[in-house]
Image (cartoon, rainbow, N blue to C red):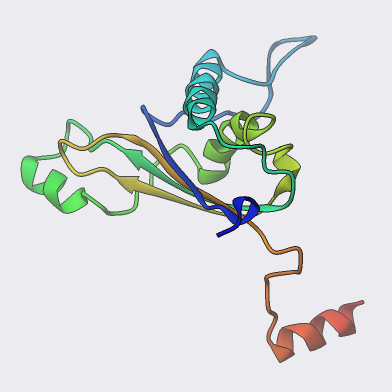
Length: 160
């Protein structure tokens, strides 16, 4: 496999932190990021830096699987059943992606605008396992990877 076609895999331990949208705590002041998300970005950048991988300069595909702990309110039976089930609570997936993609930018990916395709999952972690995010990044094809079926193509042409 050529160096530029290399698949990169890593895990960042810690409870995933979302980056909320901007808000205004008082008139004239706009806050765009929480202190917690800054720490999470730093943890991601630290792990990525230790990989020693060259900067990816073209379009990339990112698959991120965020693992969250079972809650203390769950009984042990519910915790066992929750393991590897989807985490359907806050934070939203897109809010988890923001600090994650920002942290990859300038460290592993030239710019987060180069993340042209991505998939995010939120899951409960089995009891006794690590929380965090497991990541796979690979170069995307320069050609459009999405194949539209005939109906979708025809519909797009009609709408144009």
